[in-house]
Image (tube, rainbow, N blue to C red):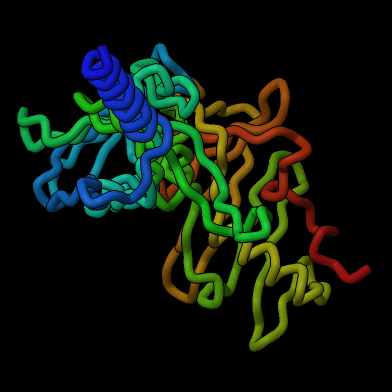
Length: 311
């Protein structure tokens, strides 16, 4: 009887140890000896296509393709210029993705970290070959020893076909979880502001005027202009981005406004503008397409001569 009791006790101890090890494995994963910190390291030169199903817009598919040594955004049968800075950040994640911590091995925890199949799904291809698919989830901030948050930011990720969820350093979710229009190049106009010597404001009626630089002084309609106001205006337009893009607008011949930026022998850029119901439609000569839109409150482009005069 004593031997039987000892056997039963041994079985109970072994079961307890098994339960304890299972709990530790799934609920309290740390950087253990079987933990592989390097999750992903791809040669980005191989990547020719990136597909993103953003959680921010589950009905859309972001398709980025490498063409002629650059990247384009593909929507339907049309290609759009893409914000290359966004593409660069995207590729950097594929180039080197290292885990800080193994968070969980439990599929039941996927929704907690927003890395289930309905989260932001990112796939990279070389031709038709799938190189990697991963799910990008929530972001968080690391804490110091006192429990206070500090500046180190991390994101949760899960590689397709794996149950493990990892935390990785950086802002991954904002880099991938974007709607289609957010990926488009919002550059409106770029030019070297210091080289501009004349700005022509060709407006309807008798409201046109010319801003001209003589030596180091700016003049408007024969009056000395405020140098700082002119400098601010040129800097603004020479580095102008506009968030709202319109593919359906068309140039109106009625009440067309033109602003041209000229150097001694060259035109750096020209803006065509016409009113719509809420503000302005705009076309930049430095972009083949598209049209842009701003509201009346956002208008810092179509200004009058008095805008440049000293107070």
